[in-house]
Length: 125
Figure 1 (cartoon, rainbow, N blue to C red):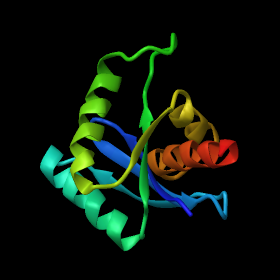
Figure 2 (cartoon, rainbow, N blue to C red; figure 1 turned 60 degrees about the vertical axis):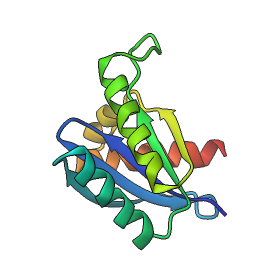
Figure 3 (cartoon, rainbow, N blue to C red; figure 1 turned 180 degrees about the vertical axis):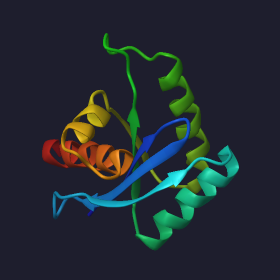
């Protein structure tokens, strides 16, 4: 069974959530503060091992037209760097997840956005 670590990657923080196909519910993890690409990927690797995940699910911040803009290109570079962790990586359109998390009144908007992303993915799987 696939167990996902979902990432909502921003310039300053990375929201995290974990869940699997069996449960269909995402559990929020503490948001990471960005430090450097190397440090961030290493932290994701440690969390992935601790949480026994088998795949990464990375939110892709597409433009309103569904295209990759500058932010999506930065996230794609981050996803490419995560390839060294040896886990399958899926990217998914994450438009409006942060807005939805804010509307829900989340204490940690970044982690909630990652959870929304993951729960939507699990519902479709």
